[in-house]
Length: 315
Length: 230
Image (cartoon, rainbow over all chains, first blue to last red; front, top):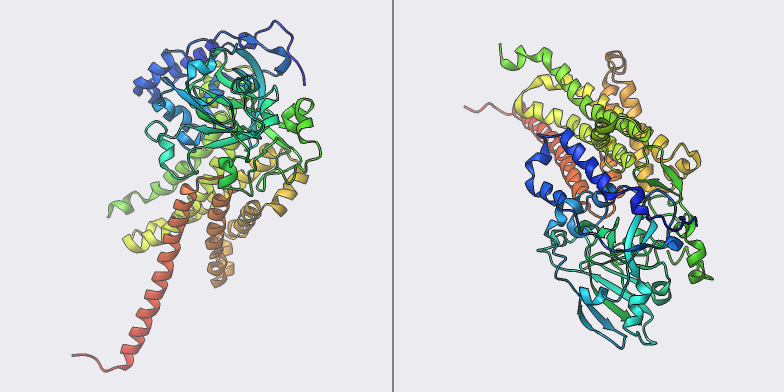
């Protein structure tokens, strides 16, 4: 994996303001069009999200140019706000990420429900530029802000029976209108094996591009597991449970022949309906297909977790 | 002169232009994306590129496919609307609509080959052979070829009654097309189901009509031998 030279904060390479100003240029170009009729939309743009103090972790950052802030925040899957990839941005305004609390339950010595502030307080934030590979064969490069999941887990002292960690998204159709449709069994659930969760790449994310996470990208707290397909990165987490049993993650429950528990990025194991050998790089034009890398390029860091496992079977 | 007759010379050009709108918008989008990746164009390029959004290849692929499917359903709408409203001029538009459906289906395939697969023939052959939704989509496209080829007046004359028989293939194309769409969708099948419903109505109409005409014919032939009612 290529590393970024230390000392360069990547969000300086492609400042968020540049993308915002490009957006206002566009808005100007089509002034009188639909955007001019939506005062809320303009207000949302006018109030930029607060900055987060963080330092770049170059060891865990790739050197590829990050996908634009505009694309990262306007093109993603978050079925709680609709099934179109433009829906989350359009509909996530109803989510109230503050106040927020997270329940820690299951096989751990310390459990209970905590204010998000108390969950976050002890953790210094770092910026990490990760590859992001969607199971739908498109990819981005995203500068996340967060802290290692392992550090969070250690605080709650999971017992020896904690073999897995299970995460649950908020279930509240008044905030997440997509949950009114039974497209998926709600609430959204994801999980990791304990050793996967303790891998230093697994990241609890609270921001991107140096600022607080926008609602549509999973505010206020989400998971990023860069060697797995994007759907493992559960958003708007309200519950973390330590368990002995393998969690029944939502996509594997909904379509078990197409999505599994592991969901490791693997160019050699195709989705039943499409090839996973290559990916479309978002924001790189019409000829931006590139080969997909084993474990999304993080093979050196994570291959040990799956030694001896048949990855065709455990897809 | 009825209004519909007075303006009949306008129908074809107007429908022709309307059918070109999706292609024109997508082409402008392609220009925008290309200008952007060559680093020139500024705000204009950005505005044009936004026609295709963040994932331009997916947008091109889906728009061409969806437009082809829409046009196939519209061609199937011509006969019922004509029969229900008596607006006979519609039939003159049907060939054009059908040829545009073929055009967009072919563009859908070209985008898939060139942009989605990057002319990787090995993966294309595997896709068509191994992935059922691509197999049926590809067969639908193949079936459209003889229909497009035999759409000329000369071929209509040459084939005579067989022409109509051959062109019933459009029913199979429509079913395969909607099926292809349904199978391709990840999870939210509401829109494909709506297409399936519309297709069912269009095909169901024909079945009912056929049954009615047949009943009408048999009852008339029956009355011819029976004594006339006073």
